Image 1: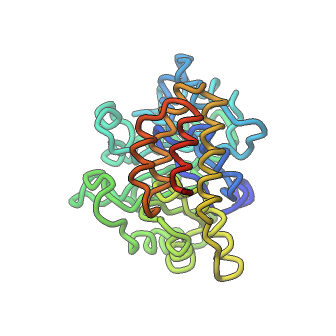
Image 2: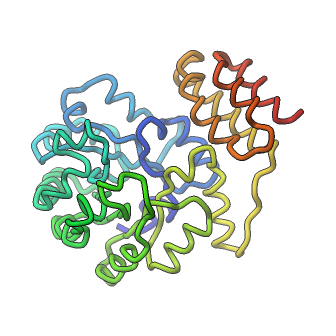
Length: 318
């Protein structure tokens, strides 16, 4: 596997409740080289659940889709393989980082950090059935007393994983505190010359953050998560910074225009009622920090239709 498999080094990370096909479409239009689905339950996929299948729907023409699955062991993953392959993933990613209690209590997500042997079995199971590249996304460890990311990464790599993404926080930290930049440097040194793609995640809120992880820490690429919510422009900006040393920030008009494009995609794919409700969290992020946005935020919170959403955003241009 090489960086060409996913088109480049800048990827939209898996974000539960966010990285649906509308958000992925906007991010790709802004320069994301690939995108990851919301995490998909291997058990749900094995059972053929409609809600699970809906998470795997693509926008028209979408390619290089990385499908992320989660499960506590190789058993549900193996039962899900046949269904998973029908969705033609560019890469199959295994979630070993989600800290949410309802996922962890099943033994999946970051609970796997306490059982490194399990990730090896899961990777081997997938590799037994397909040549599609396998990726693993994981954390530093369960807590500060059990930092084991290098040993965990070794288990995944030895089992055949071609790509590793480190979110440099422990499960106990959740999304608080700071991602450990030294851990990014250490994993880059550890796997130097191995041919395994190394990505970083955590606290990447600007193009400068992304380039620092690659040039300063030696990673092959980055996954933008919270830094891309309401800010899909970060992909274009990062590419501009990498290629010419500077970048242009979007104007207010472009920001609002992109938000409206995103809204219309949500409505097209999910209907006006669901699309508008689900879009509120995105719109709040699109207009965060804009002077005089308080009135618009209140209006967005009450808007139920495309027209009302457009009127709310229009308040920022008056």
